[in-house]
Length: 158
Length: 158
DNA sequence: TATTGTTATACTCTATAACTATA
DNA sequence: TATAGTTATAGAGTATAACAATA
Image (cartoon, rainbow over all chains, first blue to last red; front, top):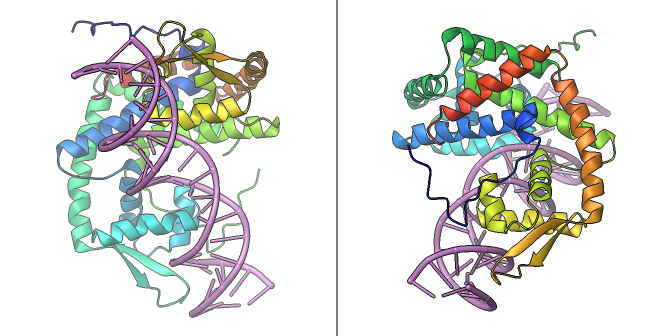
């Protein structure tokens, strides 16, 4: 792997203190992992974001849950959830059913097609996961997850 | 710290396989860290995003760089950069100067006020960094950064 | 009165395509 | 022709405020 032809337009910039900031490294890594996720799905002719995958898993595992409960689990506002569900519903992956016990709420569920798609998505996610952890040993991967969880729970916002 | 009153609206949802997915843990951690960053600045009456901080550092360390060079360093399109610079310029933190050697480019630089603000921002970022790493030993923090870099460089998109 | 879902609105980040000025 | 910056436009994620239906 040779260096790209370092013309006048691609000088290495001085990044100063940034490389040692945990938040910065975290952000760049998250960005690269996101891009890998997108590339994995695009290469397979599928379209899904990590957020949508998480949402589908949540609905599959908690069939009948309300939009409020889902929004709370995702940490987003209920109004933010509406267009996201609209899209997944338009793709035939998910349905809003009227709750029998509370007329205000929608009972969310995957369609048969949604379950089938989720199975496929899951194998794509596993391939993606394998790749992003490819330079890490099993132990290192476990350590990384533990350390990330420590960081997450040591935060103001939690 | 007592648990919140677990009413009918906050049942613990089944998150299935998600807690073991590195990508998922990374995303949630990044989200929590982002929220902590925002809270730190808001508490200090300052307004800045992690991305803006990174941009200011880059400009401070590479005075006179062009918008193209900056966009490339940030991994975003040049058109995306325009409104971001507009805002920072409107806040008086940064200026676009005409390049003496190439009339097409703008030479970016911080204003004196920008340097002063950046000094303040830097100390806020350091407080934020200290908090998010508060549950980690020095060694663990170093390990975490190393593992994150390994993940980042083991990605398709790199 | 309070809650759920929706709509209207607004802001930010992101991109592509086309335009202008300059090289 | 090619590059830099801008503008126009569009899509997605995020929020707040107000509204209708239901509890």
